[in-house]
Every structure is written in C-alpha cells, then in structure tokens.
Length: 137
Image 1 (spheres, rainbow, N blue to C red):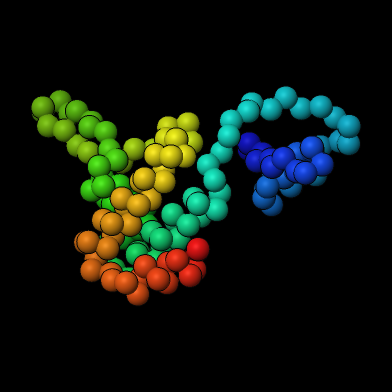
Image 2 (image 1 turned 180 degrees about the horizontal axis):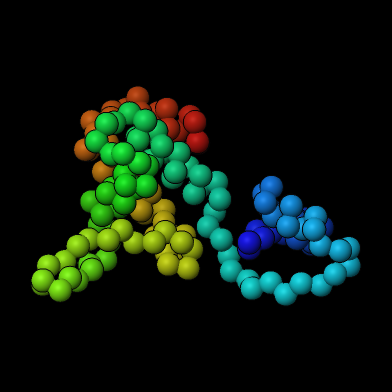
C-alpha cells in the first residue's frame, strides 16, 4: 500500500485518508521511512469526475458497470490509444487517467469533454448539470 500524505500548515505530512492513517498508525514513533514522491491527482476533482460518471450510470441502462461507461465516454471524447491485433484490425483503448499518465490540466479538459459526451449521448439536460454542480460544486 502506498500511503497518501498531505503537507500541513505546520510543515509536517499527514495521512490523507483512512488507509493512509492506518498505515501510519502501524509505524513506530520516530521511525524513518523512505517515500517515493509523486504528486497525486486533485482528489476533490477526481471525486467530482467519478461522481459525474456515477450519476450518469444510475440514469442509463446501456452499460453494466461504471468502469465500462467511463471507458466508453473517454473513447468517444477522444482520449484513447489504438491497440493493434494480429488480423490487422485496431481497438480503441481508453487512456489511463493516473497522474503519471495525464497532467492535471489534461484531466480538466477530459472532465469537460466527457461531460459533453454524457450530455450528448444520454439526453441529460440542464437539470443533470445543475444537480452535478450542486452535489460536487
């Protein structure tokens, strides 16, 4: 498990979530740990993205899982790579949204583009958009 830490105003690093707090609680006070640094995605924005997908998923019947909906909307929004097959055909594979694979700026554009795909393909109107903004502002 990789702990997720947030820098506090006191200059120290603190667990960001329950799993990270449980990881930290198992460590002896004063023990030193080497951490591979990588900045994580803006958690609130990531939560907003998946909230949008969950709302769309709950209001449609075409897709069996949120993950298949996520991949389909990303591909339709143009965020995919081509995977070649032995028979000469290609498949569109949704790109990873991991921070190392996609910058925060590109993720923001992805959010907007996927929202447009959802509004276009599922016929959700202004009410869906307003509910989304109110719920995840």
